[in-house]
Length: 73
Length: 337
Image (cartoon, rainbow over all chains, first blue to last red; front, side, top):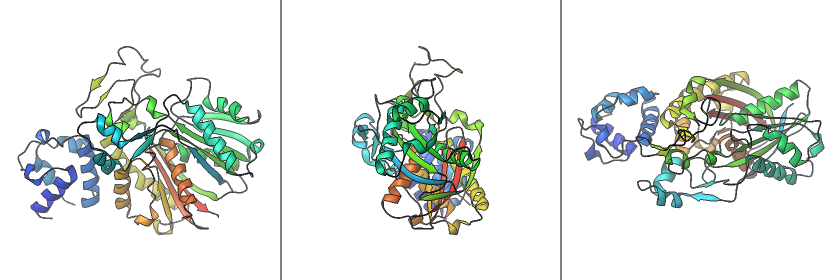
């Protein structure tokens, strides 16, 4: 999956515009970053990458790049 | 062989729609609520007691067939986490209101989303031990009494309702072939009403409302659900219980004709379906007009699918319930109609 594809998938998952997902952007600064976004991410990691990601790991994510780095099988 | 003879259910009249919720929750449109949960309507009990809903579900069961003879019932099991009283047992109140004979056993058991599977397991075990012939299994849940109206994480999902299942040792529409079960109390804190029991008595302190990081308002007297933790628990646990119950039934995933899971929310179910690689046509999703009715979701979905005529004679059906506790269970049935 290319970087563009990952950003598009992430944008679709948390229901935001791709333009908001600059790699250094703080997740807390995104309006969409709430518990529903976490649930959507858990689903995305399971469906698209076959991974069960822990909530501890999700809570470690601080910026957009942290999520992108984990988007692999 | 222990069998499910018949299922009926009862839903309270009062309905809470996404349109009504949209008016209360600024950032959530009716469309977004449906997209995220797969739920449009929930039935809310309000003043109706858990025992009243249980009685109405049982009466619907008795009225559904002339073949059901009340006096044949030897045991009443009632699954609830919202009993009428701490004591006496809700099942005892229900025995009297239903006019069941006094020589029956009646007990409540406190489980949530796994409760129906445990009820089937307990009933089956009582039959196999030759203690009883017919068992009435009731599920009745009223989470609305615990939910803070300003907590959209729970209010959008849960609905109230009750179901009644008659189990018989000799005849029925589905035999109960295999069970698996499991427990992990480490997850207790992730789906809990913190105050009201002996660990923390209700007080003016526990009634104080607080706003969480997502803008939801609740107190310690209210239901709290850590959605992300419950979701990861489900993704980790459900595939394992399915593997075990299939091994006990000497079956494979391909042998199963229908999967009827606890109807937690549509997003969770779709993720589980994808993870387990289950074809869409074998996977029952039935919560749009009821929401998550806790221990009642599986029997409601089973009965609705039966009424649609989807189950064929010999069909293998896999049930799985999972949630509060943590507690989980699964079962394999063979349809006989």
